[in-house]
Length: 71
Ligand code: FES
Image (cartoon, rainbow, N blue to C red):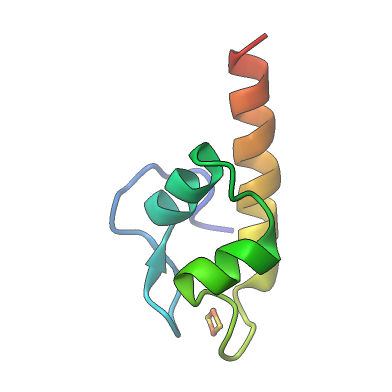
């Protein structure tokens, strides 16, 4: 995965919808933290589905990072 390690604001994680890593992180920060709801909100993973694994990896990594920061 190329996007999870980057905090670049324009890193597109879903080419079909143009959804970026930063957008997904903002959804998670607002409590929208599962693939289905992120897909509904952003359109990510509603086209070819090729981004699903990357988004799931990003979600797992970002959620574990934010949980560790709040401990
Ligand atoms: S790249 Fe995300 S649905 Fe195609």
